[in-house]
Length: 147
Image 1 (cartoon, rainbow, N blue to C red):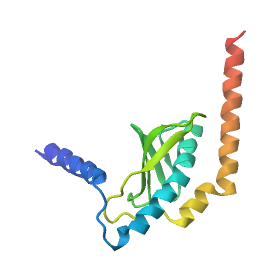
Image 2 (tube, rainbow, N blue to C red):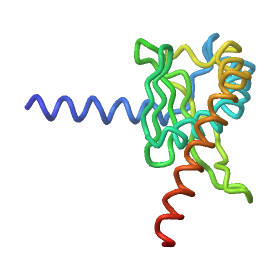
Image 3 (cartoon, rainbow, N blue to C red):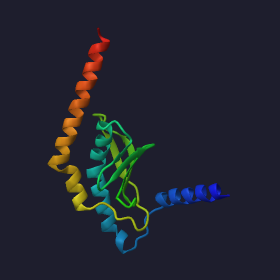
Image 4 (cartoon, one colour):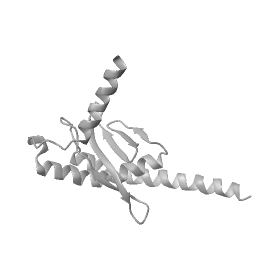
C-alpha cells in the first residue's frame, strides 16, 4: 500500500510540473517572461556542462543539474526546481534548442546571479578546458583504433 501512495505522489508531482503556472504575484507574466529568458541563456550551457562531464547528473555547491528524456532541470541545494527546460529540437550545428517549462508553485526560479554564474568567464573557461580534454581523449582513442 505504501508503494502505491509513493507512486501516486510521484505522479501528482509530475502532473504538477506539467500544469501551467498560476498567475499569482510570484508568477506574473513579466516574471514568467524573465524565467523564459533566463532558461534560454542557461539551458544550453548547463547541457554542454553535462556533456563535457559525460554525465546526466551533476551536483555542484549551489545546483543539481539533471538531464532525462529531453528534459533539463536545475534544482537548488534544498531540492527545489530553479529551472525546467524541454528540448524542442536541434539547431543546424547540433546544438539543442530549449523551451522553458513552467515551474511548480513555490519554486525559487532562476536569478540574474544564476545567469551570471552560467554565462560568466569562469564557466566558459572551465567548459572550454573540459571539451578540449574530451576532444584530445577522443582523438587518441581514434588514433589507437587506426593502427
